[in-house]
Length: 448
Image (cartoon, rainbow, N blue to C red):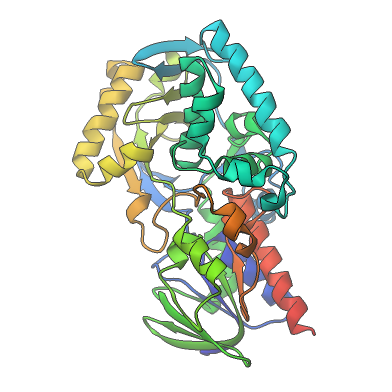
């Protein structure tokens, strides 16, 4: 394998792999440098109860055309996310059960939530997709957190708490951590609240038979020796002629580089010369959502027998979200998510302690049968090397001051990664699209 190429891609997640595919298809030589001993980035494979599972990104949303096209090309089929039966919600220590999309909340809270959703979606439509920081009220909205907006605009206790569940479930971040402008833009990029929280026709529409992890693994296999693992990038130097990338295993040179990763983890790379202030500050001010994904296997889908969908949403339990994952012919499983502050706390606990707390919650939700697990697996994304979390988010004051640096090349360095995309940011679909965009940027410059 040569240590020189037309383009070096940093990161073998779906964004970096897609960028490499596009470049190779246009006749460019490529080296993909990955710090881990595996490909996939925020998509990760494990085995549980004799079945391959995803302990990272898993769902394909309705309208995720690039992802579905990639899977279709590989012959990978989808199956729908199960949602039949009663959903459990716990708020303020009280349990309620409901079917359909409307939670069982006090009538005044439901009315307030309806008006809240209409307002959010009206305001998100005022944001230019490519420049949300230029919206008429951008400075006002970026000067407050979603939490401060909730406190000012929602009167009922239940509506306030339900609104706080949205960023926790979608980005593993608390409402007090995210800018209201960034939140509106994230809603816009995912077509609205119904899509974000929806199953059929929404963000949780389907999963892949055999697992999401198959897709990046097959992409990497197609790229062959162009993908170099265990090559953590420590330094990227550039001049008028090209880039020199220093890794744990050696140095590589190219005319251009595409850095495909979340801004926060990318901050650990040393750039020479120093990046422009807006880009450097962006790296410092886009933390990752805190999440631990848990998969629990059983002999039978007892929750379905009891009439439950397997879906749970809570406001203050160790588990913030639970969903069913049973593909006929395999062991039934429950997907569980420890989010936000609970994820930070449980990160310091042992795996056995996490398991005990997870099973205790599942017993409370679904009954004593939940104690009879035949398999348990979890992945703490906060300590995952070169990833360090879930999805990058922006606190107040970040988008209006540094948002324009998200996709702007820095000399010979271009940027990819799900967070960079105006549409489907934070989704695997966004990562794939970002790889295509970054590759096209480099090809356009290389043709000049």
